[in-house]
Amino acid sequence: QVQLVESGGGLVQAGGSLRLSCAASGNIFRINAMGWYRQAPGKQRELVAAITARFNTNYADSVKGRFTISRDNAKKTVYLQMNSLKREDTAVYFCNADIATMVSQGYVYWGQGTQVTVSS
Image 1 (cartoon, rainbow, N blue to C red):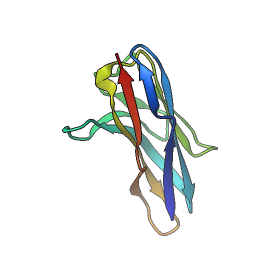
Image 2: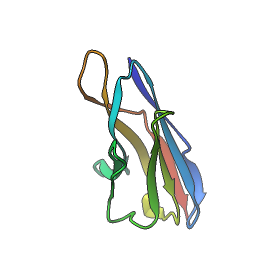
Image 3: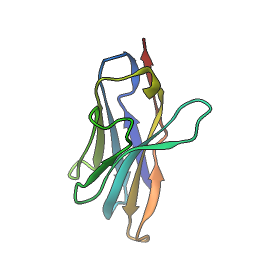
């Protein structure tokens, strides 16, 4: 079984920072791309940032210059450093990862989500 567990969400004032972490565990052979998505109330889930196994990154336009995605392969963990937070960043943040196991070449797993609330 593979699990993704997020941490680091919370309440922060506008202009502040938070760092989200997402650790993968289980019968993992290889982790391919990893990413962060978010879903605000009444809105669809959207991509925030993604990082490939070769550390290539891409970001939603709304977070470019403010958020940074990174990964530590030894720890099987992906991070999202969020700076200059705005009220519109308020959402539940989910991590996902394309993971190969001994019985599967690749499957996208999701974490349970962590709430980020930005107050004015």
